[in-house]
Structures are given as C-alpha cells and as structure tokens.
Image (cartoon, rainbow, N blue to C red):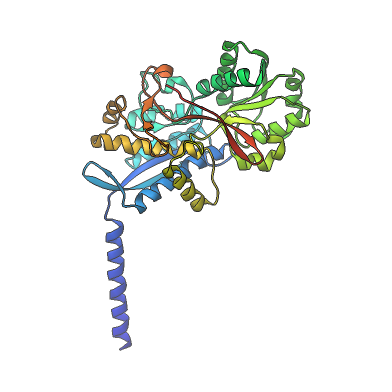
Length: 394
C-alpha cells in the first residue's frame, strides 16, 4: 500500500509539473536586453532602467502577455551590468547578440554608448542609450535612439527659466574629469553663453573618487556665481558637492542636467540639498495617468522604493514594444523597425489626455532618433522632488 501510494504521489507530481510547464510555456518569450551600469557611483541610473523594465515586463506577463501581429509574447528582460566600463559594455552587447536579442536598453553613459555602436550595427541591434553624443544619433549612425532629453536640450531650458524667473546672471561650472561630465560642461557653457549669461568659472574639475570637495570647490565659490552647475554629476557625488558648497557659505542656486535620486540626496546632504535643481522623470502628479500611478505602485511593491527617474526609464521598453506592434516584421529585423520610426505614433499610456508616443530629434540630429518624453525639471525640497516646470523637445 505504501509503495502504491508513493507511485501515485509521484505520478501526481509529474502531472502537475507537466501542466505547470505547459502553462508557463503557453506564450513564446520575447527577450529585451539591458546593458548598463548597476554598480558604483552611477549605479542609480542603471538600476532605475533595469527595475523599470522588470516591473513593466512582470505587469505585461501577469495580464496575459503582449500581442505583436498574430503572436502573444511573454516579455523577458536580460540584464548585464557594464560597471560603467566601455569594455564591459561591449561584452554585454555581444552577449545580447549571442542570445539573438535585437532590442537593448542602455548603456547609461557616453563612453559605453559609443563603444557598443560597432557591435550593434554589425549584429543588427537597436539600442536605446541614455547618453548624449550627437554622433550616435546623427546619420550615418542609425541604430541608437536617445531614451531621454539631452543636456544640450535641457540646459538651455533650465538656464532660461532661472534667468527670467530667478534673476540669474552669472554661472559657474564644475565637472568630474571624465568624458561624459566634461562634454556636458562644454554643452552647458555654450548654452549659457548663448543666453547672455556671464560664465565666471568653467575649468575646475575633480576625480570621481574624491571624498573632500572643499579644496576643489573653494576657488569656484570665490567667484560668487548666481548659479553653480554640477555638470554630469553622478547621484553619488551630487550630495557631497552640494554639502561642501553650502558649508563653504554658498547661497546661490545649484543645478544639474542629469537625473538624481531623492533618497541619496536626503541621506547624503539632508536639508542642505533643498533648492537643488535637476532633470526629473518624465511625469508629474499633474500629468500622470492611472497607468503611470499603477506603474509606480508596482515598482514600489516590487523593490521597496521608487526612483523618480523611472518616470522616464519606463518609456524605452514601451517604445520598443509599441513599434514592434506597429510593424511585426521588425521582431528580428531592425531595418524594418527603422523604417517605421518616421511615421510611428501610439497612445501614451503614462500621460493624461491624448498624448502620443512618437519619435523626435529632427532638430538636434537631423533624423528621428529620440523618444518623445516630457522635459520635467525638478527642485529638491525636504526629501522629495517637486516640479519646477515642464517643457518639450522636437
């Protein structure tokens, strides 16, 4: 009897396992890649990307999958931490190619995005970096799509607002001694000069592993700028710089064109970070749809916290999937994807009203190689971001 009971239980287990396997395999899997930084000082940028994609993929799969043409897919996110190292970014993109993945989100920095371009173009991969070099999005380049608003688009908007609303006339720049921040500093410098602002300091740099910013900032603060711009500052360095500037007695405005993490600012600078201006996620309470609110709830439940930057990072996966839905033959053919971009338009699920998903970038790149997300500029106050203003880019 015991033996027969054991065999019966085994058979039941096998049947259940087979049934479960069939249920899980009911939809074919569509893999979407992520190659970006999820460790080190800039980790918050990539973590926001990865978590946004995983939250949205789980949501899609939970509700039955995503239909493209005649097929409904479950979405799987394949992630690779490039550690902000261009060589690792290349390895990550090669991994994606080996797995037959044609659509990748990231990398998060200029060097990494530039480094993976040859692999992406050779292997037929469309990638959505959060990096600003125009040559990535300007012909003959065609495989990269900017996933956010660039510093040379946000910088002029921020400086113009502060000049008109806050009476800013003088500005100083400080940047890490790396290609990304230095490039953003040069873009900010050009934008400030074009607006007629007086640049009182633009040549001070620091190493990313700096722990004492007082000697670095002292000569900059002596110029007494109305606005101190932390060009391309990483989320880890921002609170240290802010704290040092305030402790040196700086009373002016501080801003950056990079997205930041409110939790990191609160923990690293506390009340000294009040008034800090940065580019935010592409949503505000005033424009957030019910779908955006549900995304935030799901993200928070999944990871125990939320990063405002994910209001922007949620868009890349949505753009990829909606474009594939518009042209199912693009599933494994990025040329078909590219041919769809110029005329692509779909409802924007994350904004109230009749907002649309569409590709932009003609003004900056001469072709549509940028996702259309609102330019939201935030000011940090008492542990959270508040909306300063909202704009658009073409």
